Amino acid sequence: MAKTLELSDILETCTIAFKQRVANLIKFGNKGKLLMIRQNAELENNFKVTEFKSAVFELENKDLETKIKQALNHSPSKLILFEYKDTLASVIDEVKKLKFDWFFSVETGDQNSIASFAKENEIFALVYNIEADSKWVCSINNPSAVLANGVLINNSNKITGLDLLPIVAGLCAGCPYDMSISGFILSELESVDMPEAIIEGQMTLYNEEEGVRVANPVNTLTTVSKNNTEDMKSITIMEGIKRFDTDVKYAFRTSYKGKYKNKYDNQQLFISAALGFINEFEKADIFDEEYNNTVKIDTDRLRELWIASGKNEDEINAMSELDIAKLSYKKKMCLKFDVKFLDAIEACEIEVEMY
Image 1 (cartoon, helix red, strand yellow):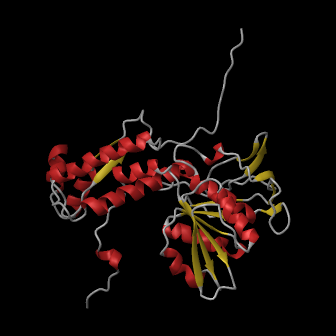
Image 2 (cartoon, rainbow, N blue to C red):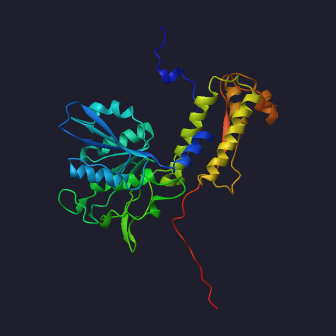
């Protein structure tokens, strides 16, 4: 009996984006799309989607208006407001249809669901006080704060930790790729209350002379492994990795998949384009321009694939690097990128010698 397959089982895949998309990225200020989720029991339908590209608007719900404007303050490309009537779980398939880079929910009961969705779909999320142990989930745990400039929520300038999400999520989505969120003053806040304990994997806001800042721009990843390295705890590093992954896959899918026969010369076309792409990432300060960032055919992987397919192991291993590179494997192009992602300067060590 024939095996039942999913679409993902029959699509040939690319596990890793190019010059045009990176150029657009730089041209439009390196800003992301932000999704804000809330429950609205008064909806006529099960859900409603509204987009905001400017903070020049008015809503009947003034608290909601304030939160949206706070989220837009650090210039994400747009805010998508997703409202659901009953439960988030009942309309989660509708959320999957939306395109966004960061997301959060203002509902206390949604926080675990948001974290799970982020991990399953590899999309950045901001939650409140959740230990998710994930490079895709960021969490803040300050218990409360005081709003600045006479702004009120629920008729008070004192807000809960959950109310911090629109402010910080807007900063995460709007922060340029060549900076860190720790480089910004949260002008929306007059002060912030510290959590009882500083916990690894929790983003903490603190009071500085200039105003409220993010002390540690990290995600909730705490367990390090081969695929989840120490560097991946940094939001700045993970933003670069996600941009890289998205753009390379897009370029492969739209410009190369199915358009060329799988031979050495055509693979070199893709590599040539990838080298131009690397140059653009260096200009955007995502890659370190002082490092020899490069891409080449992954000959080690080709040897593994040919041997696993039944070819003579001694014969395959005896082939030169060039010969094995030219021995393309069926439908698959195997490449290896060697790049260095840049993190932001977060600390300084100074030694002063006095005469």
